[in-house]
Structures are given as C-alpha cells and as structure tokens.
Length: 231
Image (tube, rainbow, N blue to C red; front, side, top):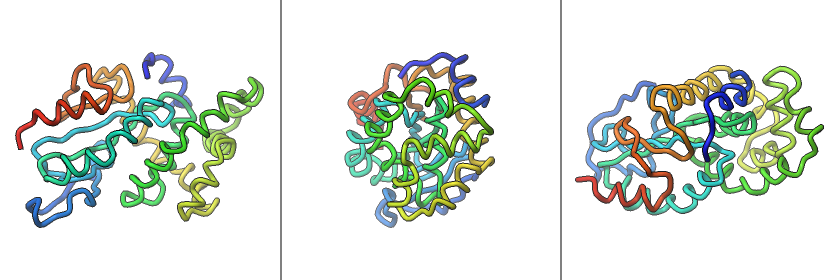
C-alpha cells in the first residue's frame, strides 16, 4: 500500500533491549521464542541471529494480510526455526483504524502479540468492509473526541471488542490497551523511523539488518531473498 508522508502525519491522529544467552538451533525452538527490539517491535526467532529481518506493516493494508497468510508456515519452518534468521514485526501506521488495531495487537504483552497480530489480519476483510461501507457522517464521528475516545469508537465499530473477547480479553482490558500511551508512543516512533530515516514508501516493506530490501513487498520476493542468505 502506497502512501504520502503528509497523509501519515495527519492520519495517525496527529500523531527492550534484547538480552539473550547464546544457544544453538538444536537446543531452542526458535519459532516459539518472542522478544522485543529496541525499536519496540516484536521478534520471533533467535534475537542474536546473523540475519535480522523486519517487516514494516499496516493493519489496514490488504497486502500485509496476504503476506501473513502466505508466509506464516514457511517463514517459521524454513527460516526462523534454523536459528540463523529472526523476523520482527514493526508498525508503519497509515490511519487511525490502523493505529487502533496496532494498539490491540500489543495487548497482553510480548507473548500474546503474534496471536493477536494474526487474528487481526485474518479478519481484516470483514472489519475493513464495515468502514468502507460506512456513511461520511459515521466516519466523521470516529474522528471526534480525545484520542482514547476515538480509538474506542473505532474498536467498537470494527467489533474489535468481540474479536479480543474471543482471545480472552475483557472490555475493560481492551480499553486499558487502547489508552496505553507508552504503546502508542512506540508505534508512532516506529512509523516515524520507517518514513523519516529508512524512507520506506509502502507496506509491507522489509529490512535486512536494518537496511531496506529494495523492490520486495510480498512473500514470494522475500522468500527468494531469504533463500539466498548463507546459514
């Protein structure tokens, strides 16, 4: 999904350092290991891997949803499990709906992130249709009030409360996650870094060891690039 920097600035509502002991791939089930980067992203795999891949994504980007579906199994079994590559999810926020979903993906801490992430992207077509079919007046009302109030209205319209309830979260817990200023700051800082420092121009975009991978925006092209990496 392409976007402009001015759009991001307005759309986003004005808007752990890794410590790990050395281990071998045989000793650790890397596909189950989740840590956090100094940028606030979530890493699955060996956090000290030679090859550190990051995805900059948006929850309202259909290409990002496709990437999650297409890459999920192979990414873990063919690459992450071997221990020589880690995969990190970072945010590149495109709009307030995206920000709301990103806040909820982080709900419950690092061990819950990838399950939340997959659930939100897996139901994307359904909740995006809700907004695409809404009247201009309804969409305008979602941008009224304080930031936490707006996020809660968006979550209610998308039935994120129902989605998160199925994952074991109460409405009170969802509200607390939507009001988490620290989480919001991390999300928006990742977006600023992606557009300002890395100069990324679409989602999903990928980096290898913090350097953008040119002309790679889907699983087939990323897979080809990963296959070329030495173990």
